[in-house]
Amino acid sequence: MDFGIGERQEEFKDAVLRSAREDVEKYPALLDQLFGVLKERMPESVVSTFAFYGTRAAINNDGETRTLTKGIEQHHIELL
Image (cartoon, rainbow, N blue to C red; front, side):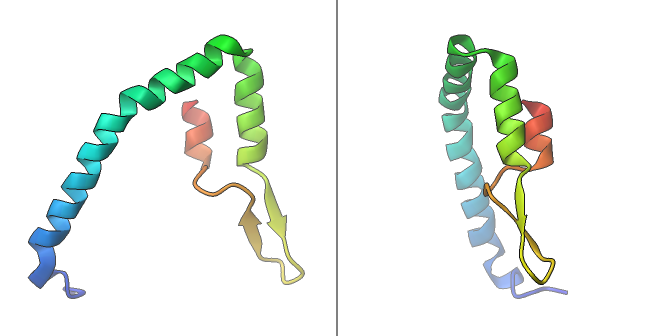
């Protein structure tokens, strides 16, 4: 299945590479920011708060769930 990507494959590839390069440039600053927080606060408190809020979810009357924090997944908590 092509999904229409074949004709725009180079454009897609360039966009993905551009995004990856931007993220690579941002990473050291984000890591410094994280280390700054961990140096100023008790690391176990930061991890436990992050885990608590990162894993919370709400359930509606139909039994469907939605997370209360967007973009935080189980693996993020485990890595931290």
